[in-house]
Length: 168
Ligand SMILES: Nc1ncnc2c1ncn2[C@@H]1O[C@H](COP(=O)(O)OP(=O)(O)O)[C@@H](O)[C@H]1O
Ligand SMILES: [Mg+2]
Image (cartoon, rainbow, N blue to C red; front, side, top):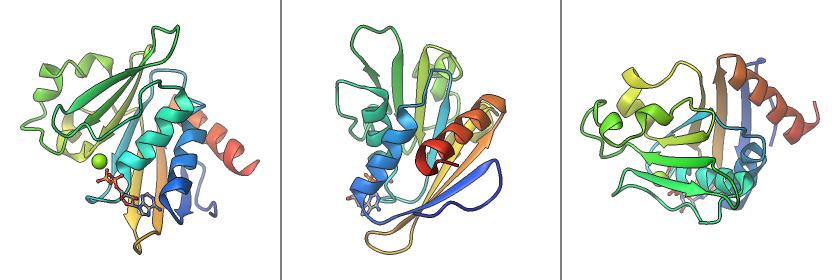
């Protein structure tokens, strides 16, 4: 893995699913609530694998699975009111459905971490303040993972993540 780019972006090369999960776990450990993390990339890119790592780092009891059919799954951790919402917009009919799912109000709420697969399906209603993650497969087991932060809180998160991952 190698860091590159500017102060609001960070790039990794992952060489296998467990490496992607560990990367997610490092990020998940840093989440305080209020974060919106968008996971973009083609089918099989590793969005769910990365989300599983984020859940592991954050401390979910339940393992994150693909939420495709229910569109959003809620996860909790022991003795805490905070929640992690894992959404998959692949089958989303329209942006308005995000509110029907009850997800609209959770985005940016300090008691919730929101992870969204296929976020581009609801781009108009996503908050500007977010961490955008783009996963690009370059071979069967190799993924380029590009993190881009928007807004102060997510920029600070990215800086902590950079320090946690690389010590810089
Ligand atoms: N470096 C990698 N990172 C993440 N997944 C990988 C990697 N290399 C291979 N894979 C495989 O790619 C698939 C990714 O699946 P998944 O996370 O469900 O994709 P998505 O949610 O983006 O559709 C899994 O079968 C996983 O084992
Ligand atoms: Mg998925």
